[in-house]
Image 1 (cartoon, rainbow, N blue to C red):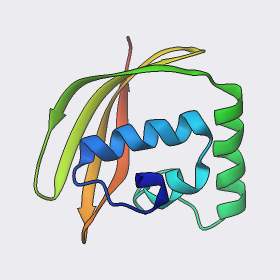
Image 2 (image 1 turned 45 degrees about the horizontal axis):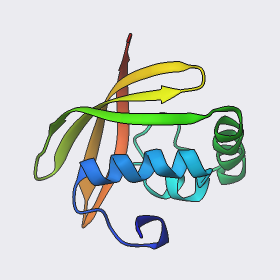
Image 3 (image 1 turned 30 degrees about the vertical axis):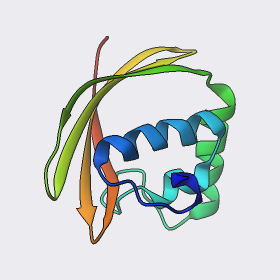
Length: 112
């Protein structure tokens, strides 16, 4: 639903839909839902898409657990634990609302 154009109503739903996009190799959705202030954001869409596609092919996405969610009107944070083939990743992600859309800005990774 979200991968086909529906807008997630909050950052938590966006975070879950982005995880699903990574798991299914949907680099177009990852790019579309990334804020321009993200360190990986680039106008070189071909290279960016290839990088995401490579990561998705090399990684098995085995599970997602939401640890915390701080909801806000314009800024929100979601802390999650992702089980990946390379190990567990814990991240506190930051999202900003731009117009009617939530976008992923950046995240702070902490040791599991």
